[in-house]
Length: 396
Ligand code: FEO
Image 1 (cartoon, protein in one colour):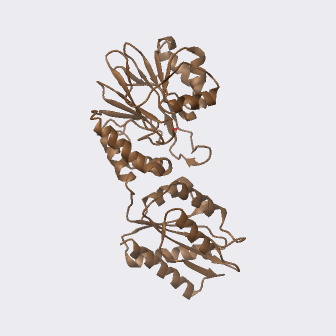
Image 2 (cartoon, helix red, strand yellow):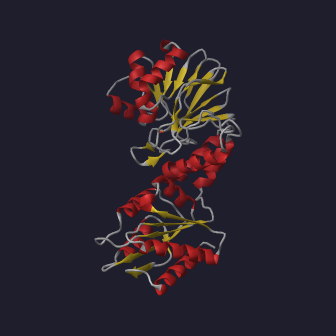
Image 3 (cartoon, helix red, strand yellow):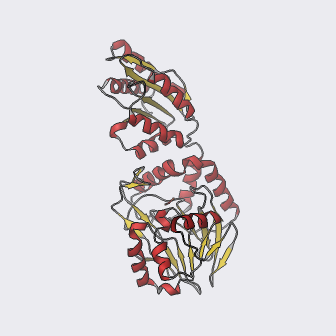
């Protein structure tokens, strides 16, 4: 798909409506995604990023319809995860001498992946590339979210090409932020932030402040996934600052796995306790084995507190809870409360273990939790209600 963004900038990327999993099986993409690539025409013609490997040949063939490939003077590789550099091999087979502008880390990643010694030009923050009537200014954005990540800014048009930053795994033929459903857009943008950028929140804040200090006017932000921010592009910048600042909504998320519904009953009673204290707290309950991991991580990101429950099985917790714990530990969430809970038949060490793991994941564990033998009785369920109340009170 190609369409003009301005008279001299053409979108030449790929909208992928089929994608349902990204980063292997790690990130669910229920609304697909896009791999955005941009062609800038000036005295020198510039291609910014390519697309994911499976679409490589299609990308090159479609690009040929837009421009004679020999007329591309510079390729900019802002970030070299394979969803953006995946078409380089096919493209460079046609124009092997074209310089590739990338960061020093970007060069290493491309060389490692393709084993080619192409004409690399290493750039760093502040470097400029004159393309005729305009300049490209490079801004390194290390660890947002890879060590090679970089933004670049196009003068005169005042466009920030932000690669993964401000992106969303969100397929739409509309392609502009003002044309799409706002709830869908922000749901996907938040899910993207929570699952990809949250561990680097301090760097997000610092990078945004650095760009603000550069006093570059920005008319449009063109990310490498999802829609282009052309209507009030700073709205997503402000959201990022909010999300990077230990973001929280008035929400508690309860996550459990269960074998014979005892731990599920406990989860529901914890929810009842929260409601008793404050019915305005949003309570969401997820059965981890039946839920989308990416979505659950997004809900934990929104939450002030969580409760995590599992029965004790073979001295440990169930595997879906292990997966959730691994994921939320990696996200390095801060300033959130937590409690463990679960049923057991004989040894019952999971509750202590879960509490320890929640602590290691950066949560403030406000109670040892509730541990119930076999099927919960009235007294046990009442303990769960009290745990829910304590959790709700802890966030007031
Ligand atoms: Fe969209 Fe980090 O690649």
